[in-house]
Length: 101
Image (cartoon, rainbow, N blue to C red; front, side, top):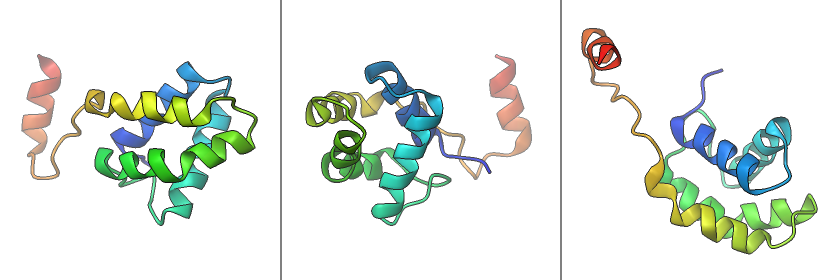
């Protein structure tokens, strides 16, 4: 199952900033997204901002992460670093041209 760029970015950030390993970070984010009624396949940066503010701190605290609110605020401040996902309007040739350099 393909996931959104924003989902992948958030999971990597949690791995870097907490003691969660890859599997735990991904599972925690999936649970938080489910509570917010969102899907890992289509979540956006704007939606993650809400999840980071309202849902994820509780999930992290429940997993023994100290300073969960602070962690979420720090990650939320970097949401602008999420790489742009290719537009669904792009022709395959355009995508491959960008990848080629």
